[in-house]
Amino acid sequence: MRIITLNTNGIRSAERKGFFTWMQQQNADVVCIQETKAQRHQLPTDIFHPEDYHCFYHDAEKKGYSGVALFCKHPPDEVNHGIGWPDFDSEGRFIEARFGNLSVISLYLPSGSSGEERQAVKFDVMARLKPYLDTLAASGRDTIICGDWNIAHKEIDLKNWRGNLKNSGFLPEERAWFDALVTGGHWYDAFRQVNQEADQYTWWSNRGQAWAKNVGWRIDYQIISASLKEKTQSVSIYKDERFSDHAPLIMDYDYPL
Image 1 (cartoon, rainbow, N blue to C red):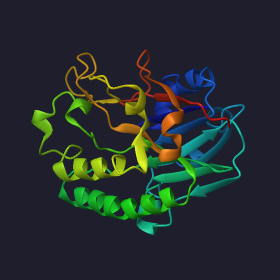
Image 2: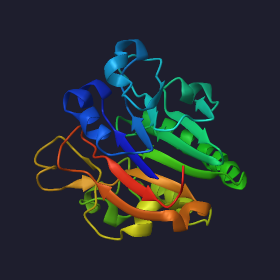
Image 3: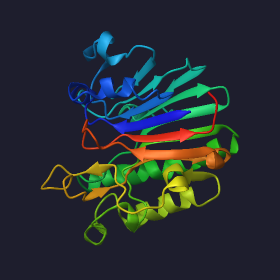
């Protein structure tokens, strides 16, 4: 089973840069998208509902903002548009497809980089998300939570970690929360199950020469339930083309879908 996740920073922009042509070549079972920045009526069916995929969008109420999507090779048994929190769901940040006992989720956590108000929103979402994930882990479902978590877990996960100790995305509280999530025995960072190397990033600032110099952050993850820990096979970050300021994270699992 192949799962791909990508923050497109505008799905129409990514389409113009060749994303869907590339995607059709990947033979992915599920593609998880974050930050579509569009309403469904703005997305022509022939382009944004790629052939051979079942496509599901969950838009933000605010135009040109946030939004998540799932492209599924196989028809899901059920799709949940939102997590059940009106404030969070109005920003289009969660969509889940269920296939038997497997859940694949596209999640877009808020960023706090714009100021204290949005950082407070981020902390609030994190506080609510932890018990939700605890309940999900206890359900016994095989789960893959893909997306832009807007947190770099460890120093190895961003180039300039010393210069970002007081910045959103690498705050001690954020890292401690993430550490508790993936070291508690219920959830695992699938990437680190198969790749322990440094300089493995999924996002680069558009400022300066961040991309050219690989001054990046690893903030896009596939977080998996414990039942899938031994099922991870391979991972790659696709950087031959740029569809966004993020790069596609591609993971293969020994799991029939």
